[in-house]
Length: 92
Image (cartoon, rainbow, N blue to C red):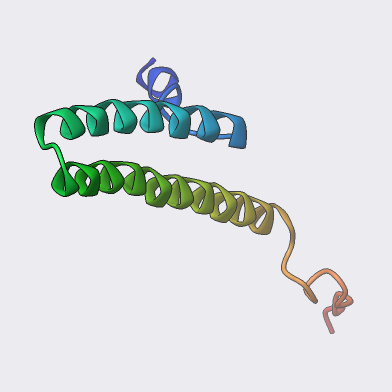
């Protein structure tokens, strides 16, 4: 039962990743707008850019991780190259 619940929190497809990145972006813009009102001027703008820049970095990492996991699953499913082509030796 715990595994079924835990699978809900695993990002498996690009579509799920885009939805997570979108949610992160909404939160970052909201937090950045608070920084703009609380710290008017150049400091608030820098904090706003830091919030949104963090989303770009996190989004890139999420998408790279999905690509890596997909390649790892495909490599595990395929037999090693050259192994299947070798003929079986007969016992003497």
